[in-house]
Length: 371
Image 1 (cartoon, rainbow, N blue to C red):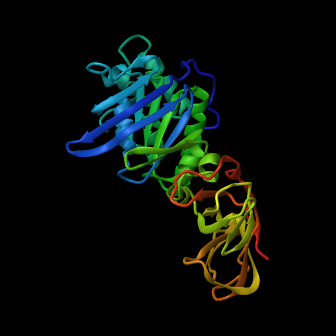
Image 2 (cartoon, helix red, strand yellow):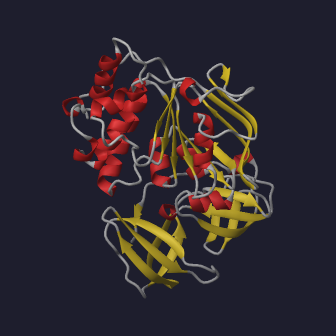
Image 3 (cartoon, rainbow, N blue to C red):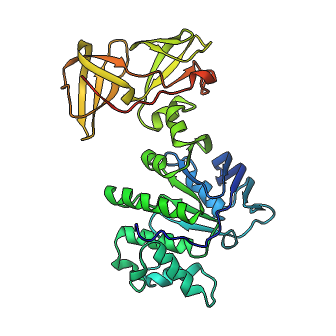
């Protein structure tokens, strides 16, 4: 698709503002007061485990579900006021997990389905197919296309009516790993070039971090944190998010102004007045060298790096360490584990809120070789 990203005339995407949104299915609460703002032209990834409410939020924005209370503004319109604006009048395109194409319609007739009849209908469908690199397959039937091509048709159908917002509900989940990454990157580039506002629902952390300008992490019907991928990874607001977004090593600590005393030794920190708490390290910020009292219990080689699980005296569960290159240690080896960077994050005991702002700064380091 590298040759299909030419300038288009689609208007810049419109903003979305969700306030105090509550939705349920009968007696079961699903959304419990969601607040979320998406700027025009921004791409936001909704990240969360199954059942957290992310698809329900998407369907409420699209007009496919009606919330019990709260408001949704798309551009300058409150689409939930009164009886609500019908889905077909919200200027919202939607791409579903399975594509949801009509099997008895040709590719071009799938794409023009949502376009108002008129002299420009076929031209707009053709333009949308050209954008996704499928102009030469306009007369094919969906069943003759690959999974990736079917999802590109679904995207073309969502873009053809020139929406201000495109909503994507796990559109890459059914694809194999290599195709998923390729199509994800192509779709992100296309959405950016077109300038449409987009929200992606996913339970895949890597997908959310690579796709979204910002990531909104959901849990239990609430948005727990919104930030750039770097902010979500480096300064999660709770241990739960720390564990959910990537791997995290969480250690109890005595915080002494500019240091933290942990089972891995004394770690330099930014100044803080909190005396006890928890520090978070990412596996790539920890190294392992031969000799010592710690024991390697698992080794996993991934090509670019190696993941170790190491049992450290005084730490209840194995410490995860990731080092660049081929394995340097084997299961059963004795090693010494050391922190190779400033502490990434800290919380005071009993809090989901990070300890004072100056302690939040992160020193991100590239995955390093282990000696």
